[in-house]
Amino acid sequence: MIVGLGADPFGVELKEAVKAHLEAGGHLCVDLGGSSEQRRAYYEVAHELAEQLSAGAYKRGVLVCGTGMGMAIVANKHSGVYAAVCEDAATAARARSINNANVLTLGGMVTAPFKATEIVDAFLATEFKSSWDDEIQAFLDQSMVDIKGIESDQFK
Image (cartoon, rainbow, N blue to C red; front, side, top):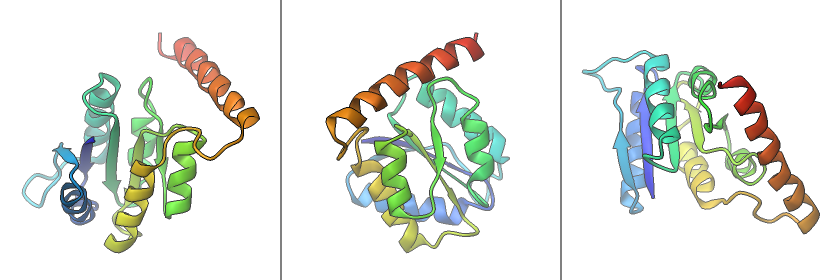
């Protein structure tokens, strides 16, 4: 899978650990930056990744800032981008299976690299609607239609 990555100065170290883990697992990473040499504001990185994901450059993204919150707020300002702050693998799996999240945000100040790799693996391995019964799957399908309607109204 092609995965977009980005970090601010507080997330660089964790982003690099996640990138190494993803590449070792056979994923292609598009690194939008954030390094010790290239300091970028969280909102710039999140905006760039969200624009590219919205345009179809990749299916999933991972953003890392101090807490994950700032990146999620900015990424969610873009149509078709559903960013979720996840601090454990169970939350990441639910963000995918229930909310169809396509951007994972992590906190470099609060998440250890070993934990981040577990979270990322769960996020990438889980498909939307997986492990739900037919009634809930129908609700989830309708929720995406309803959410797209809200987006259409808001992102004119």
